[in-house]
Image (cartoon, rainbow, N blue to C red; front, side, top):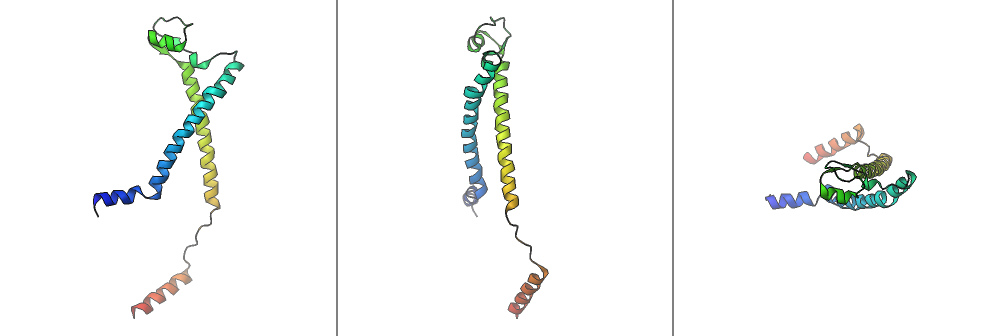
Length: 136
């Protein structure tokens, strides 16, 4: 079998196609979670903590004015942008929790599927008899 035929057989297997679909859906889902955290959750958390915008929390490392917005401070030199890190960490936790729940549900569904019974000794004996009679 040529290499192209082997690759074609590999590429059209269900697992590879399923993985490709999962990566695409996961990327889109990640954008949804990112938007939910950035546009919905973090503004609420910021409001609870006194109307603060976590995305602009940073420590200046190059003697910048700490009252500058993060983007402006980054233009003037290095900053330790811990507010952005907090936002991304919350994003990760939400995404990890949702994926955990999805895996948990899928594993419960797989447990409910009936498992094929292994061939019993009686079935094996019958199959051997048929094989032996066909040999004759």
